[in-house]
Image 1 (cartoon, helix red, strand yellow):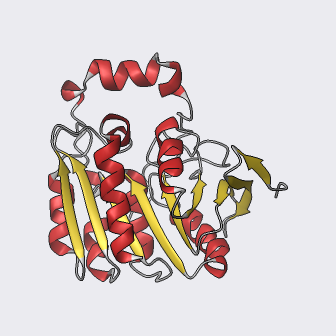
Image 2 (spheres, rainbow, N blue to C red):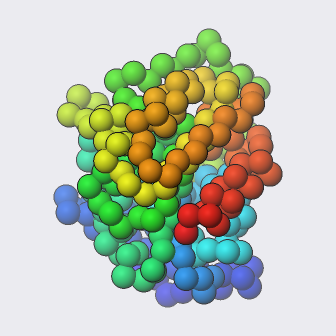
Length: 255
């Protein structure tokens, strides 16, 4: 683990790696603001903790919380190959092993496939106090990637040609045929407060996924649809004020 360093005079930023039970090295950034609660940010497919919009989200939440960001295996600076949710639960468990002794309250916001991983883990793991799932798939086998609905200017061009959009992007894909748990089967086992956020124009995971998860979730729950909103992390890019407000209000009420 590296020695803490000051960044912008606001946070002590600690970076390092954690080792999973199956020997993968998971890269992380820990923004220490002296808060009693921490928010873990879990990226989606093809993103990483260095993604510009996720760094902006960390900064927006950093006034009230410590922030912990990491790369799932096969992404960013973490080792290994991405197994399409089959083994990534080990990555999150390694994070929780590290974070839980440090904070009395833990919130988690997860995007897209990252949200799927988190739902499956938290069905049995009770160490998180509040959860936000953004563009979560209810079943990996039913992701309806609608290539004809892609907004070329805001999605393809931003990712492929915009210097800012390319930061923190990429994946090293692994075997896709391994057995996978279905979030729709696990969401009802989670007892903590859950909020679902989904864009009405999501071209990767249609909003019925969040609707189905919301219907099966128990306890305190909320669902937000952002009108004309795109997929996952792009919601933070296109609707930052609305997105951050919803996230802050939820954690204020539930942490």
